[in-house]
Structures are given as structure tokens and as C-alpha cells.
Length: 110
Image (cartoon, rainbow, N blue to C red; front, side, top):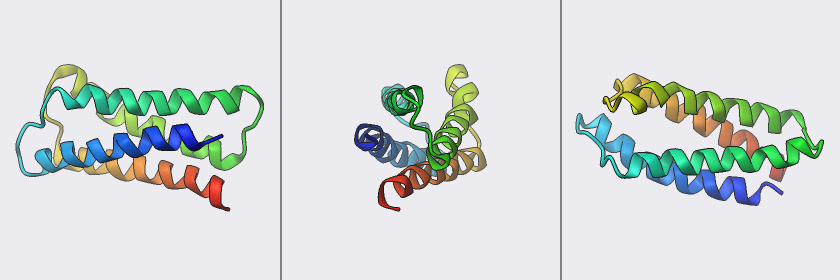
């Protein structure tokens, strides 16, 4: 049930690493990849809504979705303004997203 959301987040994470590597080196990331990264994250979140709406809402699923939603909001303002975010904010975004991903992954394996 979580296979598709996790797959979407995995591809989004790979793109995110590439984008973050540019920002951490002080360079603007390729603008065309940022919307793809955001879209894949939103698709993953939307796919998480299905089991939640069906009533399947273990605590780890709720916490993972909350962390991933928070991660999305952290950079949304900078993305919409087309400004490069501070490096610390990028690291906060990444660590929050990884925490959410691992929380969802723990739902599958534990």
C-alpha cells in the first residue's frame, strides 16, 4: 500500500540531492528540475492520502506524512519567489524529508 508513495519520494529524494548539491556549492540549481522534485513530492503525499481516507492511519503513517508535509512547506516560499534558499534551510528541508521517509519506511518493515 505504501509502495507507490515510497517510490515517488525516492525519485524526489534523488532529484533533491542533485538540487541541494548545487545550492550547497553556492550555485543556482537547474530551474527545470525544481518543479519536478516538488511534483514528485506532492504526488507521494497525495498517494498517502488514499490509505488515510480509507481509515488505515497508523501513527507512523501520520507522523511520516506530517514530516514530509512540513519539509515541503519549508522551501515553498523560496521556490515560489524563485530565490535561492539559505543552505541551512536546505539542510533542514532535507533532514525533515529524510525523517519522514524513514518513518514511512519503518511502517513497511516493522
